[in-house]
Length: 225
Image (cartoon, rainbow, N blue to C red):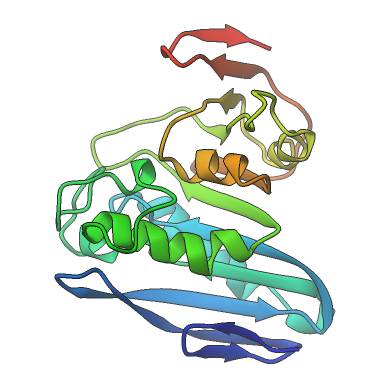
């Protein structure tokens, strides 16, 4: 069965690269995408890089990752947005989309009738995140930042962190997991929609075991777990 994203069509056992045009109301942006569609049916993993346009490390890492995939050996599908906020990237803008000054990672699940950032979030939500069984949002320190590596997750509607999300976080070689119900973030929207997700903020990653967990309350207070 084919996997279709915009005008990109991936047959089983193939990898397709191309761009999806997204109307933001006042302008149109082109998002570079890679679909790696396994030779056998299976779950869908969505990955976003460059939600913040100045976070270059995950954009490079995502490109390296897809080069190593062999769809003939895969079951399921991996869909990667290589550069999810292209205008911010082009204008070297940290944190926000220069089209309206909004933070894309505070805008999910978006609004297809809203401003440029809300429309971009809505397109990513409807076409990538909501179609996936698993989701990884890749980050690093933005232009003025130096961040300690961590994975991020959000509790679900019941206030409890999904064990599958915790297990995904344990696959990455970073020192801590931060659990934060950050409104409008990719992982908060995913948690409320009840599918499995994490956010990874790191310079490089490899497989490892567990790590300390920090829970953030609604007031920003932190406590260990």
